[in-house]
Length: 280
Ligand code: SIN
Image 1 (tube, rainbow, N blue to C red):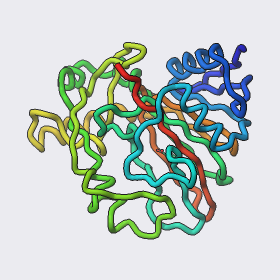
Image 2 (cartoon, protein in one colour):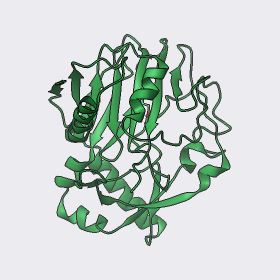
Image 3 (cartoon, protein in one colour):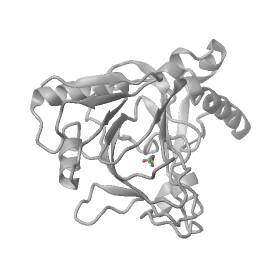
């Protein structure tokens, strides 16, 4: 099978047609999709009326399921989480901040699949920032300060009892479960080679990154702020606009992403799986 792949005119992203994701895929097609994912980092498959079983089957072509902490799963599908917001909801938009999914884990997920079910008539785009391009174009002065540094990642700002989605987060329809486990920390190099392509890039950002190993709090905050301002610049971004029955698959090792609002008064529902890290 030969896929039709149309790159976006932005910093990453492509649309993929010529495949039916409601049916099992052959090895050649899976290899083509993997190659497109590694090249474009964010690939969108429009017009795919997939069931939850289809979503799980597709995810497992690319790795084992990732481990999703702090989310409940949908009934009958332990590896699918509902990214959900009701029309009348007033809690802050979920994930409206730059991040790499679960970067605080020892082995963070390679990718994420997000399938759209109910899409509002306006707003609700997802933004991505290409972290290979951000590193390639980074001024030497900032790069020299980051080279060799280990970033401290933690879920505490989001998912601890005191976090954004903790005990004071009221009236949210999404099944988020805060926990003291979110206080744990994990080190990852801030500049690292992509585990599959070997291309150097930046990994993670402020939010899940809470500091740098060996820097005091003030120095760490300063460097983290500079890193954040650089890696999220508009020229590194791709803005994804949704339509119903669209599958999006992104590479967490290559991009940051964030949700956006602008759809108050409308429902939004997507089903999400994570693709676990490939064993070394
Ligand atoms: C996510 O970060 O998983 C959610 C993205 C979105 O809702 O657009």
